[in-house]
Image 1 (cartoon, rainbow, N blue to C red):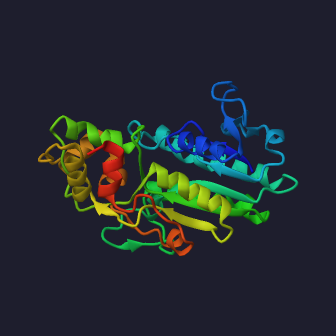
Image 2 (cartoon, rainbow, N blue to C red; image 1 turned 90 degrees about the horizontal axis):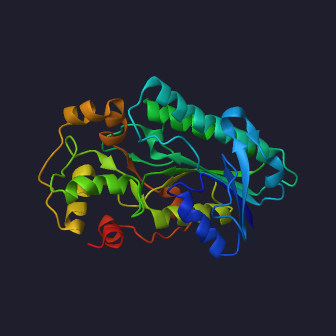
Length: 303
């Protein structure tokens, strides 16, 4: 297949592209600046500027599928009003631009797989959440609603459209896991706040596999929770990571300290609880390489 990928150099994209190439697919990376780095063979680059509504539509001609992963990093820096504007606009504008462009192609691509996040559900305590659950009411939930709604031009044109609601993606290459490991390695790690908030997670291998599953399984459409079948509390996650690293996790970070350090982001990302189940992945026969946290951490950190 010829597959268009945005966010190809991000945490998930940089793992996805080599996986697609290894199976003989060709990849068009949509990038902000033309570069030859990593291109060649079955990889080509095409420029887009979603902030300005510009895209090299000709490079997308004849594509069979698109995977849209690009968006402003939500966990870097404090959430000023300007930062929040960039977060929501980068997702809404970019998603709508690629959706509208795909909808104008002849022939139409078969599928668009667009990233979303479990933040869609907001802070829901112990409630078990599936794809049928309602959206939350906080800022991150609003971002996810706008993000998913922007895929509508593709769906309306008859393109099978999948919105993968990713949980915390665990990778040895960076992202949330590296940030969690640092204080534990230093011997000052521990739970955040009460530690009772649920974290829904997925390993990078399973995140890539879920995208590939959505690309080829025609029964998959609409919102799909891309999380492991074992959500855990923050306290459970912290203890498991400490065991994997062979380090104690005796220190706790009070909620007020997290709020002082991270502001609004603390309540929405670190202290919020989302107990999410991958109901549609399981219903369509997806098999997880890492269904349990203990097994995942053994592979990722070598504990």
